[in-house]
Image 1 (spheres, each protein chain N blue to C red):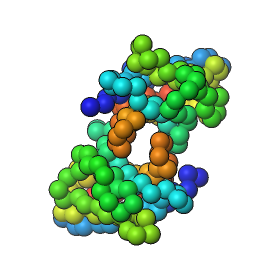
Image 2: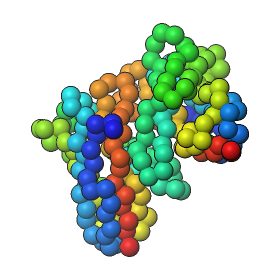
Image 3: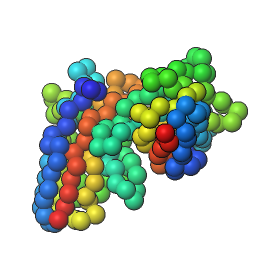
Image 4: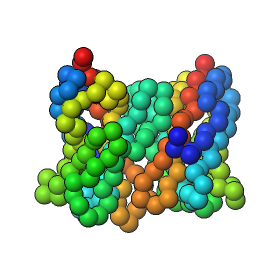
Length: 113
Length: 110
């Protein structure tokens, strides 16, 4: 079975600072990987995804993530945080052969002015 | 706007009652997923349908059921409601690899 671990349920950064949200997965076969963002009282919005090809993927709002097979990680980064980045972020995986998506428990990002 | 619609947006009902939540997937997406999101349990996968057939089952209670109709919209039925069923219920549609989430239905059981 797949599982996803998001290290740090709460992360605070200063405006303009680097954002780093960590995600590790467990899977015998490299899965498809996703990051979603959820703003208060809204649904989850796809930020970026990795399926095949280049391991560094760029998403919306200046976010990017790198798939590292050797570390079974898919950490989300953004060079400079904006106040509008404050939200809940979810990492998710799906096996290439399965239907089910597995979500991490989420990381709440606070941006300090 | 993800293209996935859910109705109603809010629902308040009493314990023991039954409710139906509705989801319309994005145009062309055959797959629909249902999730429950609560503060104490996070985002829980409930069930998936693909082109009218059940494909995967997660942590769905026996009091809950779902179906997907020929026009691909889906309904989640929650019965014998308990206080603990209060949560946000999301549906997501998928063209294949990724999911697109609807805005959710907030269910409050009093």
